[in-house]
Image 1 (tube, rainbow, N blue to C red):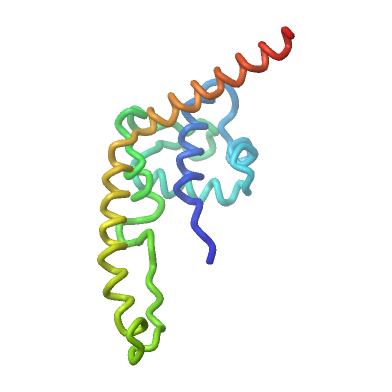
Image 2 (spheres, rainbow, N blue to C red):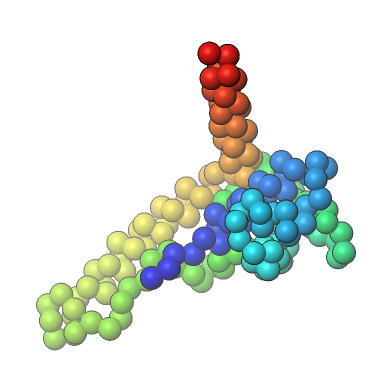
Length: 154
């Protein structure tokens, strides 16, 4: 089973747009190089982000931008834009043996636990903003640069 990376790739795209805005052409090729995927995947995700009201683009221009401040975009907003509100984080195997004590009861049992986990995950994603992610990226980069300078001075 393959786990979707659409959410993390979309957060990556939005962070890239914000950090590199005005510094380099924001083409799907440049963004794809950072995400290490194809430009086609980037264009599809950016289309979903645009339809979700998170970015603004101008056809023929490599200048996409956030549609609102990063502090007003939650990770849950991004999730809804790229995954949709009807997608579940967890799926239950419906092909079990109903005559078995486990197979006959596992779906209903897991459904409640999975629902609780999804509600908790949605609540957490709603409290974390794109600005929080950007701040963390920039702090981590500053720490890496400081460590590199320290190693060079040894």
